[in-house]
Length: 503
Image 1 (cartoon, rainbow, N blue to C red):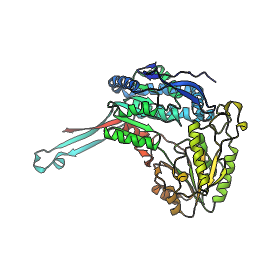
Image 2: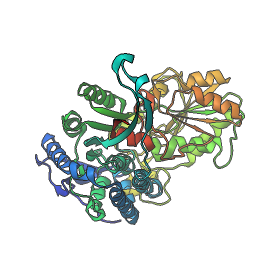
Image 3: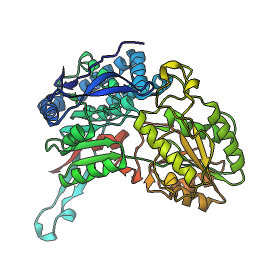
Image 4: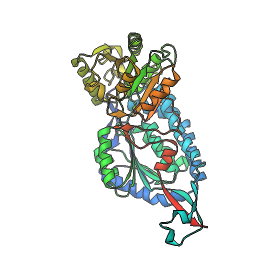
């Protein structure tokens, strides 16, 4: 395995620099429970230095032609591809996910983020309106007549504050950086202090790609000591955050009081609906897909299908086969290419997941498999102290109980039966969240009918996790505010300016 730096640094104005206060946090490998390095515990002084650098770089970067910005972003994507193995192994070490997953998904999609927005900015267009002045004036007596044209310009907003989570560290960090800098903004990014390594390695590539100093600045630290300083900074008019609903609510309140533009991608408690006419078996069938949707990345994806709603006619079959598949998934060393299930992100998160499974038992739920940590003797010696949890399948809970209502964010899926379409929709919409939903049916009319009334910003039908970067990404209710991706991201990071010219 490649050697990873033991002591990370902030990346400010094109240089790696230590935290101003000299404080560091341990960087823990969750699969072993041991620290393998340290990461800066930054504060307001570091944020101020990063904002100053970003503000200083903004005039020149915003004036850089789109074609040149695109060239640099495409070069950065190529460098990510060239460093695939190192980035994948770093992501696996930091987060506990299988290295095979990081190599197949996280790193390639990070490169794809830069490629998409690099080329998107070469194909933007302006809105144009012809106007009859006489009919559009404040009154017929205004004395104005003739015609005018209106066109819309889009200009970058300035310094963007980008705060990304620990579950898909590089993927979601680049999902924010790419549209921000492609549209001419500069940024101050804060990756999760729990998974900082790939952000550090990404910064190493900026200079080689030709990115000018100050365009992207990375400041490491906690949400309280560092993230909150970015949110509150008066010279950061744009905030993009992915994380928990409670933190998102605070950012919304704080940013709103300062009239900032804020995008919040928050939690989910996503329904996965299986009708009795669905294709259940085989690759890409409902049961195999439900298993992937429940347990990919140890269930630590905001889009995971954590609530499986199944028509009563096929409920026993789905439950039996899903539990059988879950039992066959054995946790292992994330470094092993054969491992399907890695560790959770850390000991504290493991305790949270386990506490909710214990609550399910206390609420008379039936745990069909999992529901505990694996026997350490079943794990390779290197990872026996890691934050592993067995894939868990639960049924028999009241839909209104906390286990069915709260985001667990682990390898835990609950099952509820339903009798008809109306009941399925009521169950699916019966939580405070509205991020994603999945439904399996062979009835095309039902597919469109149900999709139209589900409270979710992203809906998959007869598939899961199929992503097109052109589409809007985000949720409703307590799952967030705003949309990322495609033209929505371009609009979010730019300011619209209408120009009216009398002919």
